[in-house]
Image 1 (cartoon, rainbow, N blue to C red):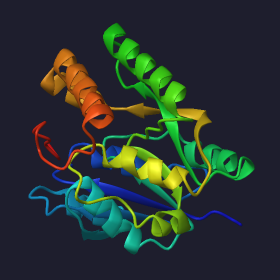
Image 2 (cartoon, rainbow, N blue to C red):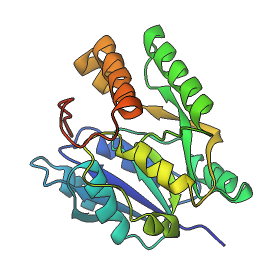
Image 3 (cartoon, helix red, strand yellow):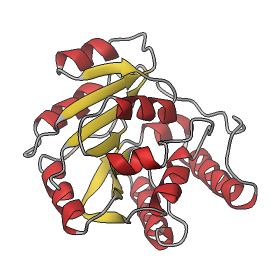
Length: 233
C-alpha cells in the first residue's frame, strides 16, 4: 500500500516557531498530502500563518484532543503528529516513509537530537535516546512531537485518550503496539527545541520527567493536573 502522509500539528500561540516548521515541510523532497493545524483558539497570528502556508486549520485543544480532531479531518493513509517547534531536514519524509514501508511498521518515531550546542543538552537527549531504545520492546514510550501511525491503527484504538493530562503519547503507543508493529527509525534523529528546558530549567524538567515516569510505573495513568502541565507559549 502506498503511504500518503497527513501531517497534524497541535498549536496554541505558536507564531514564533510554526513558520519554521511549515517552511521545512514545504522544502521536503517528498511532500505530504496535507498539513492540518489543530489550533486551540490562539490569540496571536498562528492561524493566519497556517493559512498563508495553505494548511487546513481546524479547532483543537490540549494535545490529545487536538491530535484526534486533526486525524478526523486527515485524508492520508499515514498520520504524522508533530509539535510546532520541530524543524525537519529536507529529506526527512522521503527517507522515514521508505523505512516505515520497508519494515512494515504501523507506528514509529525517531530518536532525538537537541537544537542546542550545550553539552548538558546533548547529554540529556543522549540519555533519553538510550532509555527509549532500551524500553521500546517491553515498556514502549513515544514522544508526542514525532509520531508516525497508520490511520487505520489510530482509528482501531480510538485515538488518544483525551482524559489523560500527561503521558497520553505513551498510553497511545502501548495500545497501538498491541495490534501493530512499532519501532524507532534509523533514518533520522529529529531535531527538537530546548525551549522548555531553557524556560523551566534543565534540572527541574529532568526531575519532572522522572516523577512522571515513577507515577506511571507505581500509581498509573495521570488524569489530574498534579504536575501543572502548561500547553503553548
